[in-house]
Amino acid sequence: MIVENHALWGEEPTEEYPATFTYLGAEPLPDKPNGRRPAVIICGGGGFTHIAPHEQDPVAFAFLDRGYQAFVLNYVTSGTGDVSFPHPQADLAKMVATVRANADEWHVDPKRVCVVGFSAGGMICASLATQWKTGPFAGLAGARPDDIRPDAVVLGYPLLDFAYVRDMQTRDPRIDLRVPKTGGKTGRDLLNDYLSMVTGGEATDEHLADICPTTHVSRQMPPTFVWGVSDDKTAPIAQVYPFAQRMAEEGVACEMHVFDQGGHGLSLGNANTAVDNEDKQAAVRPWIRLAFRFLERHGF
Image (cartoon, rainbow, N blue to C red; front, side):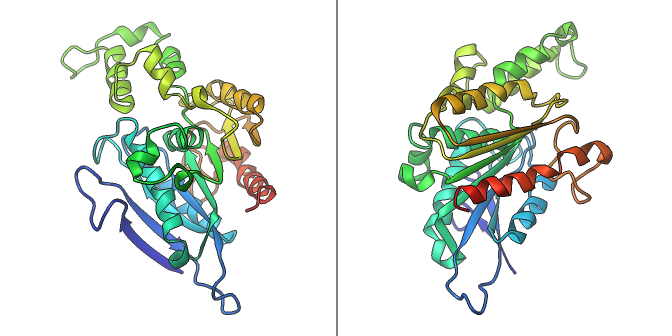
């Protein structure tokens, strides 16, 4: 097995470009020295403030076992740099282009590059899937649009619609109470500060709609697999349904699964990733088997 750690944008991470990635690859088989494998790029969640480890390497090993070369992307977060849109998306675009540019060295089939994202990482992947051609990501990555287009997308409990989440969280009147140790700011103030940080602008309806991947769904999207949980309070499944509906309307090859329990941040839902509600998380374990079958039907 090959394990390599790299800076994404140059020889070393910088303050402006802090993103890194880990390449987890299988050695070529003796009878297939030039064999090419599909690639998967994994974007863990973490609310754009960090990246959850249980949504990174465990998922990479699951794909590695299915014959993929795996790349775990440590995109920019508020803990490492400027997390505002479109910087994390530009990291993913650069990662897709980098995998294709090094396909020979990493024994990758450049026509079979899948991106997998969870929660906030799901938004990053959905943004690239919907705007690989029309958005700013290719220019920021110094690549052609075709170089950054994923060949397939897998989204786990994705955060897609900031406006919906904002409206859900501000229904509780306690949101307008002052929060201790914030200089008099209320919960609403803190939420708006967070939204401004991750979206790169004021949290207006117009700006949040422009950031939302659902706004940009088109028939140019790659095949997309989505799953979520009906009791997820962090990335409510209700904000995912319009995304799936728009894909169906546009004729995008798509599949969606909703499990009845488990909460948020589930990853694989197995012994390597489950934390405090393992019995409930067991409900979502079939997702990866279903995702692999979906990918197989689309050439992976």
